[in-house]
Length: 418
Ligand code: UD1
Image 1 (tube, rainbow, N blue to C red):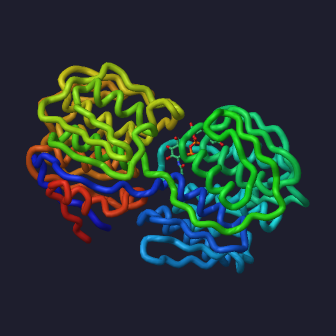
Image 2: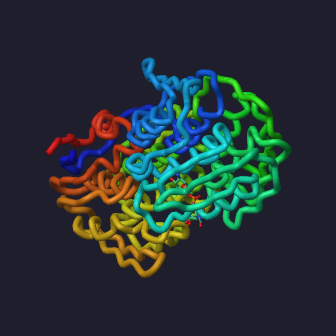
Image 3: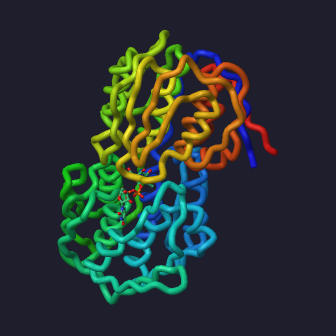
């Protein structure tokens, strides 16, 4: 298992490129099963979640090859509707394959999904939605088993705007007979990106981003070349790291609009931020002021995937903050690790009460999940002295070339294989 050794205290300066969005690429990969033609994903991110999704696709009979940074998927040979438990457990997004696999084979069998251990993460909304499209669902010793004669369009009202359920239903509905309307759908930019991708393949989807998605089923989808949107969470992670360490960084090939809730908070903290087309420059050379409260919400609210990073920043600001996690109940697992580095945080239910301290001190800490792990790395870069961040496989799930990019910015960080 790899770990990072980090000597903190360097300010960050320089410019880096942002990868394409993990949370766009995963459902897009699932969608490739819907066509017999080749799909080229331009600049696919070099992250383990995407590699695990490719492994699952290969198990289904799809062929996947990298050509430079592009990933080419050929699903013409797909012949298997079962997603094995050892792979499904490594990747929660494997559940998106239910929609596309059932569309292709009229059968799907998948072990209950894994992914970050950040709470219950149920799949009831995915299953209720699929049932409304004509899928019969049963459970057999840890597997979800789906069957249908044919998929038909329907109106589906989601109890809450789940990202994954919205995407899964979109994938099942694009080739269903008739029209599907998803109400209270998630409005995340990645949903719009999936719509853009599906329409590129010849689907008829509209409304993504508005809260109501309308899908007219088509008979056939074809291959395409597609460049996914920039990763707003990677963008946010680097900006917060620079706010914590001080200095001036530029992130390129990003989209400021998709992280406006974060930029708003960082400006409130006292950071100077300039936006120029697809570039964001963040400058900070002093101790920041805390923001009083931050609550995670579905998009366009503050993203839960940046909650750990912004909490780490609040720990070294002047003043007190309350951070409320509304989406995933156990997303404060990184808090005891930050305390080891000197943070003053108390968690009560869904709230983290933070009293700002002068700075972090280096320590050995463990990454328990993807975003919490990234927050620990940022804290270690800002800390006085040497830190070790253990179990960084969680971080590799979502950040490609993480330490390389941080080193380009002047961070003293090395990966050690133990
Ligand atoms: C996606 C993102 C993840 C992000 C999350 C919220 C991907 C691959 N992952 O995860 O990075 O943190 O959105 O922005 O895109 N829920 C139910 N029943 C369901 C499904 C969800 O109750 O069937 C609840 C969840 O417990 C949670 C809320 O809905 O409280 C939001 O979850 P959801 O939007 O589905 O997150 P994911 O799609 O799993």
